Image 1 (cartoon, rainbow, N blue to C red):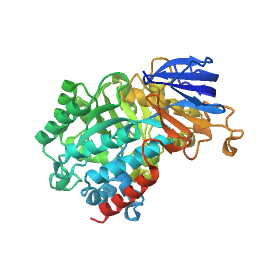
Image 2: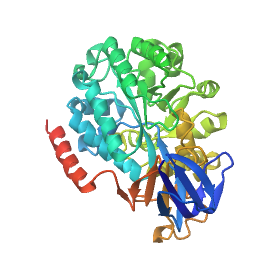
Image 3: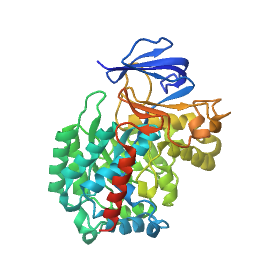
Image 4: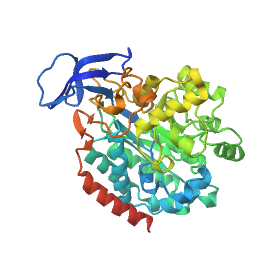
Length: 451
């Protein structure tokens, strides 16, 4: 049995059902789970002095494309909208290999850990030459080296340009190949147990790169294997027009026909839903990964989060791919979401604390997890700490629940703990040599982009 005691915390923002904030409290984590919350200080194998610190539950990133970390800030795509942006970047992404995926995943998830995210879902759907196993192997290896809790996807595309889709031929596969590889990925990596560090979802990319048959068969296989379903939906008006012209109905109606609604399904973006569609999402428990920075950068629109929350739609927060965000910072995403919805919805916008709960509890719900997202006895020991005795937080910490949305936090957090293990200490990753990782990643991105 291993144990970690976080003692003397100035404040513990639990995000539990009662919105409890504990003062001058400790947290005992034993074998990865929270064993005690309160003022007592029992003995433990390791003690972390949290004097002067605010403790928050680990954040949950519900949609990412980690491979895109190595194609961010490219000048040739900065002013493009989604379809043209994708066409341009597929010419780079078709050169992915295991080395690029490992190092891009390490960089992206490393940044997430350093900014308070303890669970990352990645939507990987580009498999050049059918290299499925090697790329997922690389991602899980990076996650294990860092100590982050990872949900991966066996994403997929079967519609290339010759079929009316966007990607080149070299990164699509047949439905049979995809289903075979999807089952193999689930059997190899998916762990459905409580406090699991590894899960897998099935995730066709989008209606303009995945066929009706791929969606239908993926849903059947996912439910047979007991895993979740994920895809991009209602991200842009171009997508809406594409689906209307090709299938004669709006994107959500198309998904409903294919059995792609329900509490085991969540969509990335979900910007262009109408009122009736929002009600369907709420009634079926279908979730949405909200990606505000990506949506702003690609001029895609503003997700109707205030209405979703009022209706009870499951909503999580996400950074999306680094190439459409240019960062993997969920704390930055949290504040951007707060400001965006204040701008567009005024008093109807979610509060700073609402956004924190979306980034923690909401993300856990979207991913179908009951073990993360809040600090409660029996739940996972996933959390992060911020020292409040710093210049930029003077006067900002009067409301510790709302602070991360209303004021924000720049730079790395002081500590991040995942599964009871300290994975960020004094702002530095503990699982890897950061200087070495930077050197190797810079060499890998140079080789990748110069192919």
